[in-house]
Structure formats: C-alpha cells, structure tokens
Image (tube, one colour):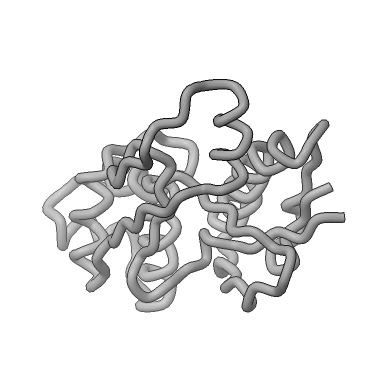
Length: 166
C-alpha cells in the first residue's frame, strides 16, 4: 500500500514495490489534479523520513501545478493571464486544465509570465534501475528530460511528495 501523508486521497497499491511505485505516480497526479479542479491549494510536501521515496508527476503536470499555484497565490484570473500572454481565454483554460495535453513550451511561457521558471533535475532512480537490471541490459543513466527525470519548479515542490508504504 502506498499513501501520501500530505495528499488526502492519493492511495494505491501494487503486486510488488516496483508496481506500487509506478501506480503511485498516477495516484499522486490524480489527487493533485483533483485539488486543481476543486480550486483547492496544492499541498506542500513535508520533510522526508527514513524509508520514504520520492514520487514525481511528469514535467508538464508539474508545470501545470506550479502555474495553478502561482495564479492562485497572486490572484491572477485566467482572463488576466490570457491578456498577459495575448491568448484567448479558451487557450489559457487548456493550459490550466489537468486533463488537457498541453505543450511544455506553452506552459513554460505562462509560468514565466507569472514570475516562475521551470527547472528540470535528472536523478537516477535506484528502485527502477534494480528492477530493470534484472530484465534488460544496463545502460548508463542519461541526463535528459525523457529518462525519468525529477522536475523541480522554482518556488514550489508540491508535485514531489514522499509516499508512505504500509
């Protein structure tokens, strides 16, 4: 069983630790997307304790969470953001819609307009590397966005929560 102490409703499990961690990414995103849809604040993760691992959402989801948080914190409406960016209300609505597939370039532009910059940090994932090494030849880790990166957005880390295993 995987749960997130700071994110109510983000619970999942799997047949083994690897599967549970894979499913935890989806559970975390679904719960945080629910906060956006219900216009709630995104919870800030507490400090990690021994035995916890970091679970992240994909970079575009992380950027959308940060955009939502920045707009909420600064009292910026979708209409006001649309005016800043010279875009339609509909387009900005898509940038802040957790269910819409947006391009990272568009979300990054919106983030910069609210004073935030995305920062991507690549890290080795020891759990997944251990499982992968048993099934496929080991490759040296790649430091690029497509190789399981951990994303940090300056000013918030709400998308980067340590799960609790039961």
